[in-house]
Image (cartoon, rainbow, N blue to C red):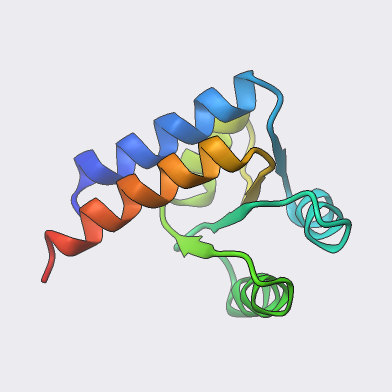
Length: 110
């Protein structure tokens, strides 16, 4: 995935955040997933291994996609500041568009 593609994914995350359709941070993401509200989870590439594995396992059990992109700082930048290692997208439309952008970026690498 190129920097431009990653930026497109994170900008879409920012739009979802401004629309009030995200939860960010480990606790908020976990609640969104366990309550069935999350459609997609994004995990920072620089997240600790335990954090990433916990998020990926939780998503796998819930049957929702989990993407690794951005850093904690860039995810935080697009979700309102600070450093966030995880962000859950709560809207199906935003989640679908983020997945499309992510898949388009990863297919360029092949």
